Image 1 (cartoon, rainbow, N blue to C red):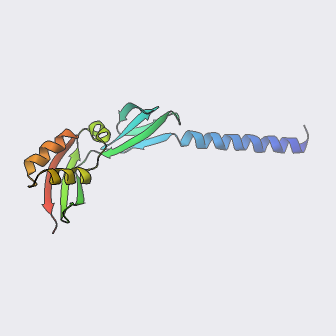
Image 2: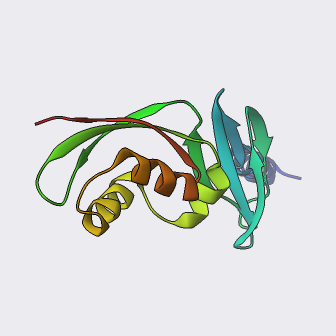
Length: 140
């Protein structure tokens, strides 16, 4: 082997090694404390993972959800122009994820269906999507 072929071989091996390292690290997922991650394999639910470091094959596995399991506060603009601060906690991340809604649109849907934004109605409806309602405060 002459020197040019040796240099080419080292460059090719270095490029392959670099690509392999990028491939391996791009498939690593880290889940923080009090969070969960939902993974699908070929568009089918595969599992819910809690705190830790995970590695999945790319292309077959995909992270589709990442949720905090601590109380959250969110400012929401209601359809009638008012603003409220809603405090809630996700109890069932799987149910919440596959319900395919967010808290703002869900509260607006409840507000449109009911003339009065009753706390009992909100609690009951939030339970159907895997959320525990904690409180609501008007901001205006």
